[in-house]
Amino acid sequence: MRPYQPKRILVTGGGGFLGSHLCERLLDKGYEVICVDNFFSGSKNNIAHLLKNRNFELIRHDIIHPLYVEVDEIYNLACPASPIHYQYNPIKTVKTNVIGSINMLGLAKRIRAKILQASTSEVYGNPEKHPQDESYWGNVNPIGPRSCYDEGKRCAETLFFDYHRQNNVRIKVIRIFNTYGPRMHPKDGRVISNLIIQALTNQPLTVYGDGSQTRSFCYVDDMIDGMMRMMETSDEITGPINLGNPEEISILKLAELILKMCKSRSKIIFLPLPKDDPIRRRPDISLAKRILDWEPKISIEEGIEKTIAYFKSIL
Ligand code: NAD
Ligand code: UDP
Image (cartoon, rainbow, N blue to C red; front, side, top):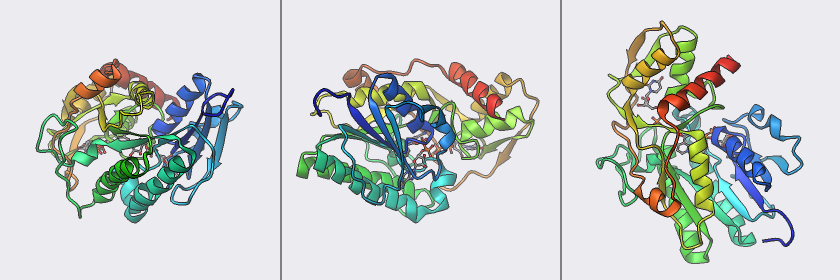
């Protein structure tokens, strides 16, 4: 670490949903933050309020190209996260995950920075084991429409562990389960943002399939807390560690809850289930509880209320 100076932290994908919350929380702790983003799925609006902070720096940059900065820690979040965004240009999604990770790991190696990878529950694919713990290797289709993301993230994990074994890079890998909250992109097609916007604008709520598929939704503040705890662990802790809320809910129940909380008169309609859509998903977070002393604190009702307030403010 550089002497007599606050920690300097690079956040790739810092203009996105999770990245912007992370930048904010790191600045609150008094750190210097360099935010790097190509604004493919993020937005300058997410970080506009941070631009006047002298500890905040913004670089428009695509991580598939090398980057030369001096920092103490790197959070690698750059990658579109919603199926609509990551399937828009699947080859680019793979490049971001593979070439982008190599660039960020090369940077971490050169400047001896600690680096955290935002991996995903998608590495478990359509899981045959329930709930999913970190020892499960997953059930992923290597050639389907979700593969660019799932296999890209799996390869990124491989690269992180190879840079660790081969070059002693200090790595931290977290597997993020579905996370939601203010600043989700209103058009990225993820279920919570879609359903809330539909309920608030009196459009039908689009449930894919019969809505019996499940997810476990974590509110953004809890997720950022978990991420930062992971970065602060000692060097021998590499992960992967699951971060998510173990409260599981079917998509139909979620739609009903959102209708009720928005006091909406919209109807629910059923549309075809997208190919390879995982049927069940719930994290086993025993490891996060034990190693990070972390578990989510915000209930789905409380989180959805805050998210509804956000979408009301921007619609
Ligand atoms: P997001 O799309 O809002 O944010 C991703 C950011 O990365 C965007 O600002 C985008 O413009 C930027 N980006 C994309 N490709 C880039 C590139 N090549 N170079 C530079 N910037 C690039 O998504 P999010 O929900 O904030 O997700 C952040 C990270 O967390 C992603 O890596 C995602 O895979 C991971 N994750 C998120 C969730 C979730 O539920 N939100 C779940 C699992 C994993
Ligand atoms: N989904 C839905 N209606 C929508 C958007 C999504 O029923 O308008 C379903 C989707 O098929 C999936 C679940 O909600 O089963 C979560 O989808 P999302 O895209 O938010 O996340 P992921 O599938 O990546 O977990």
